[in-house]
Length: 86
Image (tube, rainbow, N blue to C red; front, side, top):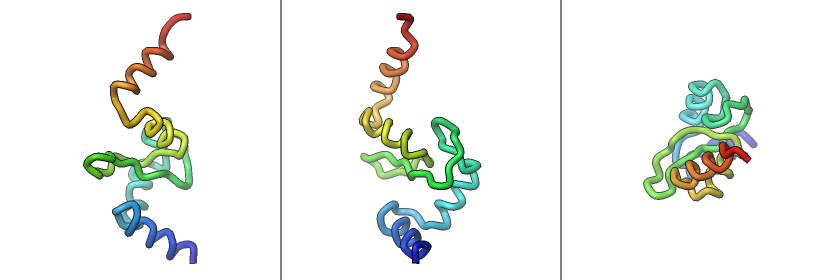
């Protein structure tokens, strides 16, 4: 039952087949594309404007990028902020 739900979820909601998702997980070594932590379940990260899938992220990294509006400018500013000597 759960497997059938996951396949339907990926086909209908995520926009790629569950099989492609599994191939992506294998290609990334079951690791988040940002933090590289290993995970059994990774979120499909996509560009919200174009819909293009960028890769697989752990929930924390996916939410973090979303909270920064997927903006390279905001991410760079956050990095500069974290790198500042205090």
